[in-house]
Every structure is written in C-alpha cells, then in structure tokens.
Image (tube, rainbow, N blue to C red; front, side, top):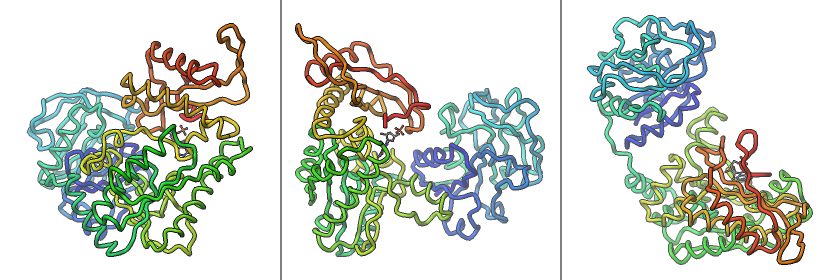
Length: 514
Ligand code: XMP
C-alpha cells in the first residue's frame, strides 16, 4: 500500500486515484497521523501531497517526528517536496517573481530512478509560490526548468524524492510513468489491487460480518446502490433484501426498469414500495426548492422506516458510501477509521430512529467512483447501468419550478423521455455529465398550431459537461439535434409550446435550476 499524507492540495485525491490506476492500493490520511498509526498501515511508500501553505510559516503543517527514519521511501510533491527539503536542513524561499502556474518544459536526468525510461525533457504542470533554493546534505538536483533550478531532487541512498511539479495531473504528460517509477522502481510495490481481488476480500469480509443475519439495502437504481446489491448478493444471496421506494418523481418508465432489472435479471429479493401518493401529498402547494427537498427527504426516511418495520428482523443496513465521503468526514471529524453514516442523497438512508437496531455495512467505502464502475463490470452488471448519468435524489420534483403535481410530473416525464432518447441516439449520453429538462412555471407562452393560437408551458433543456459537478459548461450540441429535440417535444407533448436551451456555465449558475 502507498499512503498519501494530505496537506490540503486540491489534487490529493487524484494522487490516490492515480496510484490505484497502477493496481496498487493507496489511502489518503491526515498529514498529522501518528507514527504508530502509520506503521500499522505497513506502507510500501509514502507520498506527501501538495498544499496551500508555505513551510516557513509558523503553523505550517508538518509530519510526525521520526517519519523519515522509518526507512520507507518518500516522494514529496510540491509543498511535500518543500517540506522534505526544509525538514532535512535545506532552504525554501518565496519566488522572486509571482507564483508559477501552468505548463513548464522540464529537463530531467533519467539516470535517476524516478525518471528511468523517460525522455530527457517533457512538459510538467507547475503551481507554486515557493521554491527550494538550497538542498540538504545528501540531495542532488534531478530536473530543472529555465526558471526553476530544483524542479526535482533526490537522496537515492535514503530513497527520498521530491518533485516541484504535479505528476498526478494529466497536463504532466509522463506523470503516470513517474509515479510508476516511484511505486514499482523505488518502493517495489506489487500490483495486486484489482477489482477481482477486491470482490474476493469483500465477499469474505461481508460473510464474516453478517453470519446468518439479514441485510437491508435501499436501492435507487444508480450505479452505487446497484453495485452494492450485486456484491452483497454474491456474498450472502437470499440474506439480502433490497427496498426500492418509488416517490413518483422518477423518469418515465424508470421505476419499472429498476424493479425488472433487479428482481428478474439479478434474482434479488426486492420490496417495491409505490409511495407516489404520499410524496405528492407532502409536496402539494410547496414551491420553495429547499422546502421541497426537506419534505421529500423526511418523507423518504419515514417511508423507509415504516417499510423496514414490515420486513421484520434485519441486523444490518447497507449503504453505497464511497471513499471520497469517508475522506471528507474524516477531515471533518478528525478520524480516518470511522465515518458518521453520512446521508449522501435522499436515496441513502440516514436518520433512522434508534429503536431500529442495525449495524452499517458499506462495502464500497474504500472505492472511488471509477473503481465502483470497474467493480460493477467485474460483477457482470449491464453497461447501461454502469454508465448512468447521475440523477438527483428528489428526482423530477426539483426540475419542476413551482408546485409539483402529478400532471406536471407527467408532462415533464414525456419531454424528458424525448430528450434522453435523442441524446442517446445521437451518441451524446456518455459524453456529457447530465441533461436536465426543466419545466417552467406560470408563463403561458403563445404558439400557433394549425390555424389556432395555443397557450402552453415552456421547458428548458440543459446539457452540461463536467468533471465532478463543481464546475460545468454548456455542451455544444449540434443545432440539428437541438432542433429535433425542440420539434419533437412541441409535436408530441401538447402541453408544451416552447423549448429553450440553457447556455449558462457553473459557476455562477448551478446545474439544476432549483
Ligand atoms: P447543482 O445544481 O448544485 O448540482 O450544480 C450539482 C450536482 O448535484 C446534483 N443535485 C442533487 N442531488 N439531491 C441530490 O441527490 C439534491 O437535492 C440535488 N441537487 C443537485 C445535480 O443533479 C448535479 O449533478
């Protein structure tokens, strides 16, 4: 295992993902982890991440005393490199000019283990305001750029390396090769982190934990909960009960599809709760988006709780918590080992009352999203399930601006279903993040159908590209596709007479309208 000490870089998780892409397990831990805990993890190598601090600041984050005496190979990236250099007696200074940010051409010494097999110059991604101006005893420079003398350094004898650039980002073209050189060449780690091995270990672990008990899983049809279902089913078969709550705000035909898929094709015991009436009653007359979300969330927990009681005894509740959630709550709560059962969306059940006694099972808690997809494939899930676009827990209810009624949901389902089928047919589904269709309130816009003036509703189509939903840009869909979508909606959904395309970016606009 490679352990990554987190100094707060926006790329810390990315480092962990890159290491895992090399089939070596990695974990991200707080930088102030104790030596004892670190030793218990038995790391084959350590990576110190970048971070926003400067080593010469008084309260700059450091690492536990004795860390460099453990004899474990270390790679410092950006701030991590500066920290190593300053801890070992070198000197770090603020750059004379302003911060260096962007691509830089690197000349590297490929006699160093870190750069073996690479060309002697390549592009690297820089983002720093400080630099190492004097190296500690035992260190030598192994790469530089026109403006930066010590772009990478090593003390090969002690197996300590530092790079000022970011090998984890895609802009550093040979970045993955450099990480591989560290992981395999320097650390001698073995590439045993595969999803096939993960299944084997988790199946074993689940069987040991569950024994002859029963597990309840709330299923949404999304890739996370479906993968949990497949994994648990493999481990404990009929001891797994899944519950799917249809709140009435799914896409057209979606509830049926999820139920068919799970019960018919995966042969999993499924309780299908058709709760549309009670959800519609809860949101009747509510226009405020946050109030809508709150009511839907509460109703979800209440429904789950009532239905769970019907099921009878179960001792475990399974959730599709992923590693980024675990890291986030570890940062917030200060412990790595335990996550407060976090309610990720309205589909993940939290807040169940204390008198239902259960233990949590979170078999994806060590995985990143891309690994969940790999795991799903390894478990034989259909590609359509694996490549699903994300869909908000409260569903179409937050895509209906203003009051949510069964009629308005039906109208939106029709329009949404046309958009999705055209986006899929034109091969855009897997190229974009999401394609919300939003039904606008009030404005009755005029249209002409035949010889008659008609008044109808307006819907907005939004299609965005994004890496992680933090930022998003409008997808450049071809005009022909947009026109086809518009004319089909207007022809086939009589209630809608006008279709707009939302061209705003996030920020400042969010992806959803509410
Ligand atoms: P925004 O609109 O904040 O959305 O740019 C970012 C991502 O989050 C999803 N989203 C939600 N998911 N419950 C959810 O489960 C919600 O209330 C909710 N609101 C937004 C949105 O679809 C996008 O992927």
